[in-house]
Amino acid sequence: MQFEVRALSPDNRLQTLLVEAVDALAARKSVEAKNLRIVTVRSRGHARSGGARGNFSLVMFSQELLSLLEAGLSLVEALEGLIEKETTPVSRSVMEALNARIREGSKLSDAVAAQPEFFPPLFIGIVRAAERTSDLAQALRRYIDYQTRLDMVRSKIISATIYPAVLFSVGGLVGLFLMTYVVPKFAAVYKDSGREMPLMSRLLLSWGELLGQHTLLVGIVMLGVVSGLVWMVRRNSREGRWAQLAKKIPGIGERARILELSRLYLTLGMLLDGGIPIVMAMEMVETSVSAETRFKLKGACAQISSGESLSQAFEQHDLSTPIALRMLRVGERSGQLGAMLMRSANFYEGESARWIERFSKVFEPALMAMIGGVIGVIIVLLYMPIFDLAGSLQ
Image 1 (cartoon, rainbow, N blue to C red):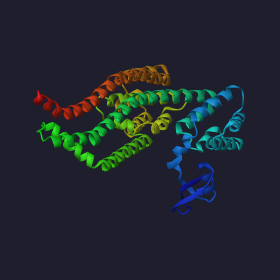
Image 2: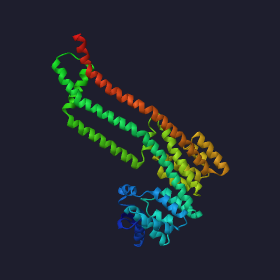
Image 3: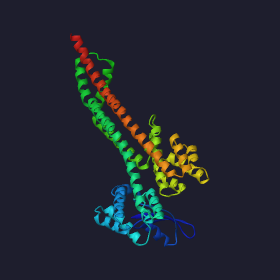
């Protein structure tokens, strides 16, 4: 793998080096051996690492490792067993790199930190905290539970959007077929009749003729629109902008904010339960929230560092809700802040799941009625001249 390393020379000149290494830690060591002080280390394949990471399931790896550790195997034996059964080249190379570093004497946290493209900061922090208490199994159990709950919320949101997306696509294709094929046929018939048509019917037929004459151009434009939408979805998913966009939609913005806060509470609660200090935990969760929330989180972190309580900092930076604020205060008094954060997350996850279900039940019929109405209007406008003709014949 190739890494781009920016480093300072002994005379404080900034240099950019391209280094071939197994991982980021190896690249760092090779540059430090040249008496250079490292500023940043970045993988040249970072933009493509999403595809590679897709072949390595961190949740599955955690579940399998947990099962072997609970069966009484040591960490090295468990990793060797996973390597032997693994057939995917990417997953196998990741585990071989972990095993090699642990055999050299590195801690598991350092070994996973050397492969940031496969192990997020949250996982690294959980493992590092577990090494202090020598309870890696419990840390893996927490991470699996955390990721499973996030996946459940994500799957509910995705399943709630699939049917409306399919319905909208089919309705759009039907409308496009009517306007580019059926309407031009009717227009040719009505022109030969020589009868005066209603204004709306004339407008519809004019649009139909225009689209029918430029069917190829319409197809290219539609293909471009679809490609643009796919690109936008992928970009927003990769950069985590969906939460920020959803917050601007009336009626949905507040619910999107609560969903993001519940994820924040769940992550923070899990880290605090694992023994990680609160300031360090807040710095670790910054990568899992939107840019707006990240800015608020930094302000809250600065206030906590200066001596204020978590509940006060969250209240002042709009990172709390009335119920969560009460729970945080109870957690601060009882010394169970992590547990109270997780309870807040549980409360809002259940509430959000019920809201998503109600929203789907209302939105899907409304969308179906709207699409049916548009298609119905097109058909009625097409047949209005025929109705007029039938009335005159009678």
